[in-house]
Image 1 (tube, rainbow, N blue to C red):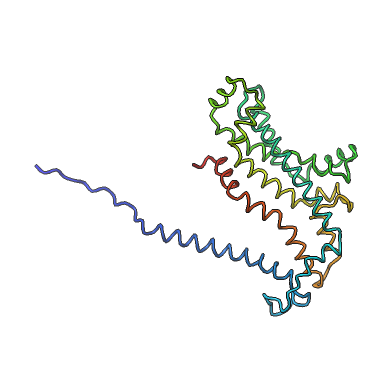
Image 2: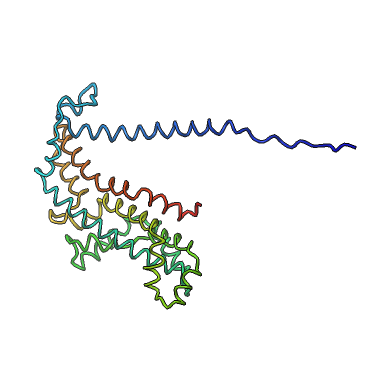
Length: 289
């Protein structure tokens, strides 16, 4: 008696997968070209004569390449001072966030104490509060401390972030507790464990956090406008807004485009340097293997 073989359902065709990938690639390429075209046009406008910026029909390439437009921001305003202020504030805030968020994330992840989950919930709840809501009481506090028009007022209120604490807590959760217990048995203190064991393994999430914080702080406008509105403490976004008010009309567009490109360089270079670590840190936090 011969056995009867029942054929199962046919496996799904794999020919559709390459087609789907091609469609996704084409859509992403088209979107990337659209965004890149805006950046390229801005870069070309920075070296155009003023009368060609808004010319009709639009010209992509200038008839005369005016590289001297990149020196105009430094001649019209203390642009170098704005750059220095943004660099000092951005680096300081980034370092403080990496330290404080790593410490808090390590505490929430690897220590058991009463009220830990409730406290972490309160930290996450602050993410739902718009920053504009707390600016009035925060400004009153900074004013009482005498930190208006000072680097302390620009740096200290941004020294930590709920997002950074969440990011580091989720990342440190992936570390095995046995590794930390072995370090404790060897006599290492908690700070030494954090520095020698946790920090080297958290290099990618820390790089991702540093990139997020630096870009957010570098582009911040409202808070620096409130507490650092004098020339000595004015940051790039505030300085660019003041320069734009003095360069209304098409005549000031090339200079403003050049200033905007110069302001973009630090974040662009930082992203290119930390791109790999940034992707690794995000995937590690998400638990993607």
